[in-house]
Length: 292
Length: 262
Image (cartoon, rainbow over all chains, first blue to last red):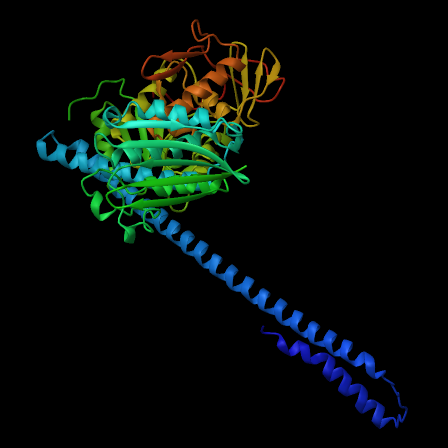
């Protein structure tokens, strides 16, 4: 709204016209006659036009506000990404030097302990890098059968030690029809669903139940992974999608706090969305929605 | 220090970080290499002239003349000197660019020093057997299979076949490392950019695609052999060829400028 004065140009032009007319001695007149019974319609029309203008201006303002808020969120996310990239970048050389230096030391218990920590840092850096990779990677888009993918994930998590004493149920619709294929990168979608099921195993106890469900809705397909595990406190639920965020109640479980951001990045690159519902002590459900 | 045996291969290490040079040089030296160091790209090129190393370990991110520019200049001059790049940006384009510009291998920082030594030895084994390093070649031929690494095209018996981009990258990596056992994790890192072990199924799926397109039977493979529980190995001998559809599958390492046994 910096150029509001442009709106004054017609008035200025009119003023110039009148001044020129007066100076030139123009004395012509226009006489308009008005039929009185039409005045009500014309007044109504005038009010309607004014109201429509007000509505249009308000809608435009709202759209602008929404856009600037979205830009702010996207900007914030990009900024955090850049920070994480810089962190990754700045840590790489020192960690490389530490690992190399340790490999030059005679093998002692201390050196072995330090090397284990350096390897942990290496893994963290690899995970951070993975996020950057996913954000920039070229997707190989092809039709993906999510049911086959879900069953493959269940086979793959079968190799995890926790999978033996939890019950893992898989359900995909048959009626009115099986899930239609989505267009996506099968390797990345596999990783996303695998991460969710592995998470559910990680944050549950022997005897807990984990369900992997597929469903179709208007214009999309959802994959939901639900568990009867420990759940997440309400005040921490907004943080789970952020890089390196670790819940206060998860200190006993190994992890980098990059699993869910990884999942979200994959899903968002497919134009989809993620949502999490959880109750402390009752369990958690994470739902991925992919557009059809 | 004792007198080094005459067969110690010369390795040049180019990295601007003194912390890495100071720690890596003695490690490589203990691993049986004669090590020279340089702290930037310009110095690296001069050191290549002066010492004619058998292999160069080259950091990508360096001030003034970075590792990729050094590699580009070497390849432009027709040098086939084997180069391992140490990348740290770690993004897919960096890795793809590294391999496309003629690196023989690359490692992401921070890397396991033993892994670096294993990669150096694998490349030198080929070179010492009288076969040229393959990283700098625009095209490769193995039996009926020919690839143009620049245009990313594949021919089987002079008939062009199509592969998905990742299957091509996988074939390219396998063919540039023939007769090496490549773990699924390493193939994942090279082709997909991350090495989450659970994703190894992705490698299996692409290998299945390759075998189908190349009509290679997994029971009696000519090209891609399964190494049970580990990964894969490219079986067929690979020779350099020019890129392009009509490139004859010529062998030989013309232009090999590396003074291997200097």
